[in-house]
Amino acid sequence: MKIYRAKNYDKLSEKAASILGAEVISNPECVLGLATGSTPVGAYGYLKKWYRMGLLDFSRVKSMNLDDYKGLEPDNEQGYYYFMRKNLFCDINIKPENTHIPDSMEPDSEKACSDYERIIEESGGVDLQLLGLGHNGHIGFNEPGEIFEKKCHCVTLAASTVEANKRFFERAEDVPSQAYTMGIGTIMRARKILLLVSGKEKSGILNQVINGPVTPKVPASVLQLHPNVTIIADEDALSEA
Ligand code: GLP
Image 1 (cartoon, rainbow, N blue to C red):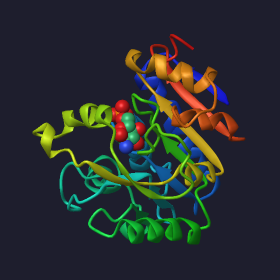
Image 2: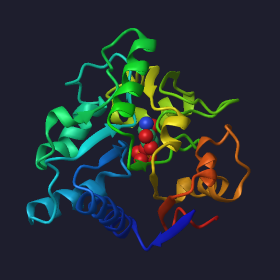
Image 3: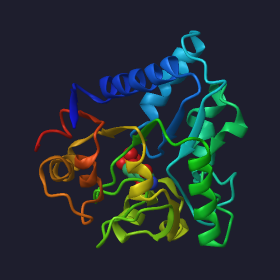
Image 4: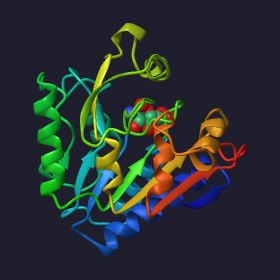
């Protein structure tokens, strides 16, 4: 694991965007695995800025998002497709048909997940997967459990995840209880992984991810076994590691 200590959130975002941007420049047809949550928003801001400056071209890039809530309409403001459009896709030249996310409106979980796994495989696989870190160590929506899930699957969200994500919804009861997510295996098959972690409240869990045992009770700890992982974290997040 390469660990990059950023002075603050802005520096973290700039460094993350520089790694994503370098991937796009060196491989204009790359497949980027993208993440939602508040952490990557700053990096997306830099990508948009560098696109406007003419430095980046996304016309042949494909994207695969990690996860989405089950049952939210694509234009629901809390859905992850809406999030991606608002925070990145609307302001760069990525083609809508090249952007992929689990089908939140497909009620048949097995179909939604096997379709998504196939789309990822047929794309040739993810070149660079961007990840945030949940407060309980989740990546995508892979919640702590007894095993590492190999493939895309439907999860029932942990109470702490519903609690953490309710800030985005009008009422706590509006947070969907289930989501479709890439599996740990799906994530681990990415050629490169970039994990972003910001803030003091993630310092304890980040320490477990880096220094603790590899265990499905801390899903992100599996990244210790990946041959090409970069963690970019700010000083607050690294304060216990
Ligand atoms: C959600 C997403 C994760 C994300 C996590 C952390 O649960 N499914 O992919 O990493 O939130 O979000 P934040 O960056 O807002 O702390």
